[in-house]
Amino acid sequence: MKDLTSWAIISITLTFLIGPFIIIIFAGASAGEALAFPPDGLSLKWYLKVFTIESFRQSFILSMGLAIFGTLAALLLGVPAAYALNRYDLPGAETIRTIVASPIIVPGIIVGLALLRYLVIPTGFTVTLALFLAHTALVLPYAVRVVSSSLNNLRSDMEEAAVLLGCTRLQAFTKVVLPNIQGGVLAAFILGFVTSFNQVPVSLFLSGPGVKTLPIDMLAYMEITYDPSVAALSALLAFMSLAIVFVAERLLGFSRYV
Image (cartoon, rainbow, N blue to C red; front, side, top):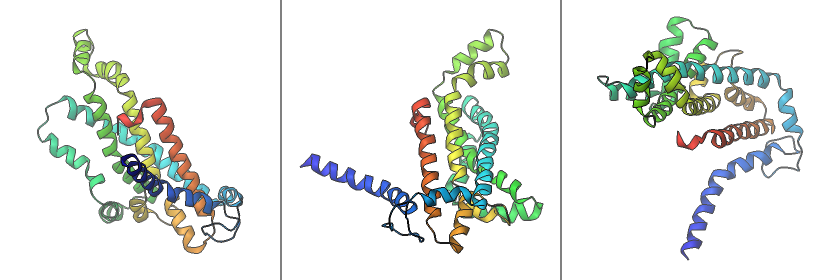
């Protein structure tokens, strides 16, 4: 009876988690002209149509650029910050960690509105630059937390030994610390990339005419067209995210860092 109850709970949980994904896959494979489930027959035409929609191609390129370069910028800031917080007894270190984590804690709508009102409007930044800065800020907490986790697992005496053998602090960091935490850095990059690419609330406030990330473009497309192409694109993006996380888990042991 106990095993039966356990299997029932697991089945309900998996249905709750995977069910929407399955619905989207089949809705995108509908042979009909309107988004519906169960689908009116099966066809791959909507999956193929996704690649012919110009706005989707443009917004996909923008989202990829923001996710890649925003995450790299966050790592350039986050790796030294994580190192300083981990290796030095800084005054107010816990307060600094809380401030760094604030983009995760504060709802995205509030972050987006604040950035629009107090960063974009007063400075006159372009939409693309504003999105880049916002995505970098949103990914930064993940970079600091994941890299900090890697540093916690790295013995500090290895670095001290390198210094005693003649390395400067910078050389010890680049030759000893960085190679030993590269798995954590790559894990932070992957987590930041997926987070940035799928980001909606902040991007919704900062997008402008002709400049939209892919999730925002999908929302705008659904306002005027209710065909299954959005479901097909959603399924493709879900597969992409799952593939990235699966490869990261196989190569890096992604779950050790998050």
